[in-house]
Length: 246
Image (cartoon, rainbow, N blue to C red):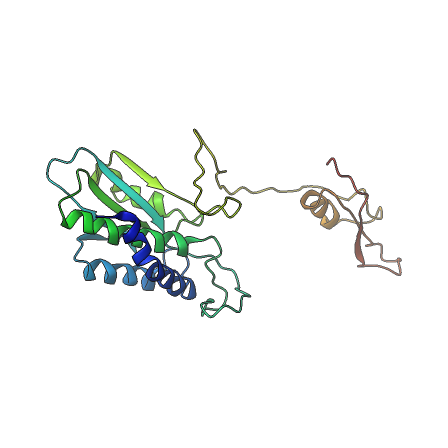
């Protein structure tokens, strides 16, 4: 079985899947149509799978007897709350939703892998059990956390889990690898400001617009006029001192 030929044979199909998924983006924990599309493909290829995990998640399974290892490959399914401005024929059909992070490509690529590895499985060419994880809610909404809370890590005894993320700066056909952490983690935090007046404003000012904006945009100085006697009361503008080293 020539894998390169297999890849070339399904390339156009994978591109079509990606376009279809891209045109129908769904937000975290709402990937119902996406999940249904994946399940239809798995049923078409007669591949067993577990569903649901964290609401819309799926784990497809190609298990062999006495496997040397249990390996899993993971993709995510969710899109972002962004308005797509593209005029491509496969642009998002949903207002305010877009696959802007590339999850449509990740998902299509993994489906292509499922199809090819399934052929190896049917021809008894696999020495390892292979699993395919379709995770919901990767975009900062805790899909993986919910799967773990539902017993994912104890239900499946994987030896390793692999995943990729598109990186447009890399040349086509190149994979980037690094030992240790490579991408920043996401978290949320709250900042509160407590004060009576702002140094950039008139002495009678008691609002915090300029201080907060200075915090968000440190390369600009924001000024406002709040004095009742000022003819420019309520004006809000900034000057840019070009503090390039801030």
